[in-house]
Image (cartoon, rainbow over all chains, first blue to last red; front, side):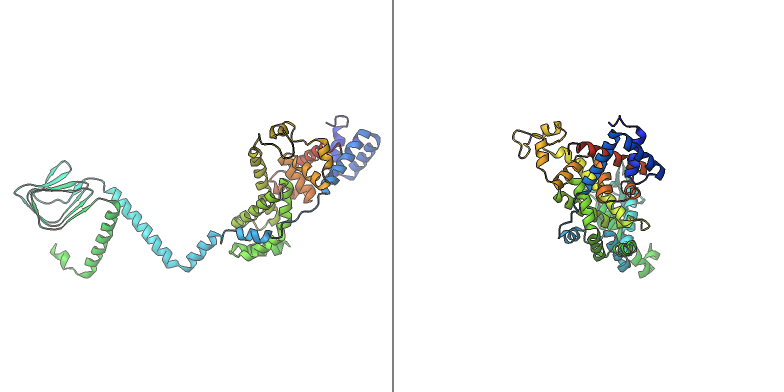
Length: 212
Length: 187
């Protein structure tokens, strides 16, 4: 580019235009510009360039700029809103947290119970994943089966709960209620109900547990 | 002024929008000017300046109050402008005819490095010409030149706004200056 002029002069020119030149170098530069017409030309063009750019008039934002900008803001910073909500509704937050933790606990107990299991009662026979009350036999007591089916060929005296399985139509007799649960949410509901009933019986009276 | 601004920022942090309106009022013209000189278009400048204020508002909690607010705000704005300039390039329909130039399309304009013919430059008014020459600068020189010669900010502040070492800022200003000198050599 400006190969005619020494690098040092260009650097001093830049320093001078940046307003960062020492007095001694400033004198050196001025002396040099006197002697070299090429350097002087570049220097003059640069100052002209700066003046030209600075002749750019000041522009102003449109008159409705503030109003438009404010209208475009999100209504309230969400963090502020959330903080305020938490300050004003501590109970609500506590309740929400409780529900969240409870459901997390129950969900995990649901997935823990993926294995085939059933209540041990006398006379029960197991065929693969199916619990069978054999023909001619009587089973006394409540029965809960998880992840398996139930077939009753004989007689069952008690309530039946089947989780993730089914009661197969069979020739036997059940003297009690049958409940089939095969979905997560029903299982949740069942657990909540169960917990609730436990609580009721705990507070309600001891006779039931003595009977058992 | 900084104390006054900081007081308002504290109110904004507590969710007070009115305090933010006062801040917009205070900085609108300077911010708009930076965007306008960077982008060369009032409509886009308004768009980006608004976006910059919105981002400042949403992220006000990340602002360090020991620093200068305007520096932070200008930084958001210059970053948005540079993004916009870089995104804008492929936006042109290359084969669309350029307005007022029969048979001339963007291909020929790009081939010419977007230089306009001499007689067209002569017809331009000074203000138009200044903006045209600024917008011909590569974006990294453009930001430095606008902050230095239009906003007249100190080099140290420019280095903070652009998040660049002081030496790099100086180099960009020198190169930008030199590029402009060459662009204007026919003046």
